[in-house]
Length: 112
Length: 113
Image (cartoon, rainbow over all chains, first blue to last red):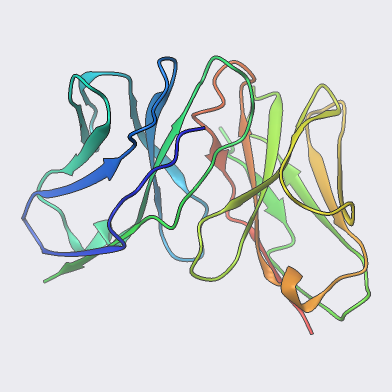
């Protein structure tokens, strides 16, 4: 399983776009990139998953360059309620290994 | 459609005791995973159950054991509790074919005194 590196913390203001970058230099061919969000005293919540290029859903966008050694989670026009820890994970969804490997994540603080 | 539910919400035990935590998966899901999350850390994988068998296990001692029932619900048992077992215990369910998208419950906060 590829290791990921992401910033420990980030600050932003309401209404701004936030980009959180994750490095995964040893990503394997079959690996997907998945992001989870976790609020205090709650379980993580799946946000988005991608393999290459760009993926967008109602919550966020995920940008993945051609070499796939990094990825960027983009949160448009954040609000105070987006204050949370964001985890970047890399793994092979088809291998059925079953386990998600979480790092320390990025703590995003959105200020008014 | 109920999501993942866990019980109890909070639990206080003393060292050496045993504890059982329970989890009901999201409707339609056949796989249950358990995670331990210490304060300020990311969740750590304990083990996963599918078809009532343990499929995968993380780096946790044998004091941690589990079970999955025919209705896909699951239990996590921890024996001989240590102070270091104090944590948030999370249950997550998924389909065996897409484990990257796991649905987490709210967790059980275990405090060992």
